[in-house]
Image (cartoon, rainbow, N blue to C red; front, side, top):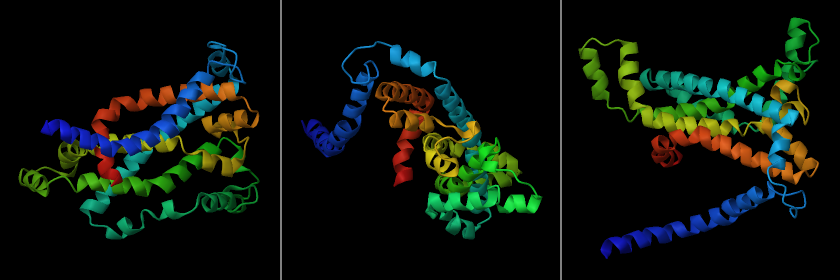
Length: 280
């Protein structure tokens, strides 16, 4: 009886959050799933016609390809660069970087985009230096600019996450390794990486999530119709919303959620227990 009472008390604490998530997330998404099988007005059942329309849409395929390419490029780079910097800060005691690494996150996106425009516009500083007249933000180079922008703004945050994991690895392990004659690389691969496994899962989930939030930078850099190299999944949703194509938006949203779930689910059990620690 005592155990049941404790479980009931725990459940009571979860009720407010569960109610909020149900009302503002689960129920609306349930309606999105329903609308993905109906016409624009939501009255006529159309089966899988909306999904067929989405998958055969050239713009959607381009947006999905670019989003996937951005994910494949940025996530490994973000994790590798931030881990490298975290090791420097932790082991070489570079406390100055620890204090300033989050500054890029404090810079408003609009201000950051203004800087990129000042650098890469047709009349910007880069063209003035190279004696060229190239609108870099409307060429295939826009993808590289977007990657650099994403890494610059987010790396500091992930450095802090890695530092959380590094500080949890006992110093005695490194001292014992030094006594056994282990070098820097041996300590990294046999002590640091195994000790960071739980944190790595959480960091990966957060990085995957943030990749899908890059639309603000894309939109402010190049507008509604950017170069095709940075035409992301959010652009197609924006255009469908403008055209009031509710049925295509609903079907596309279900497809994106399913893809994201398939990518993230394998890391859920490994990383889920540490997400709360990292956020707190």
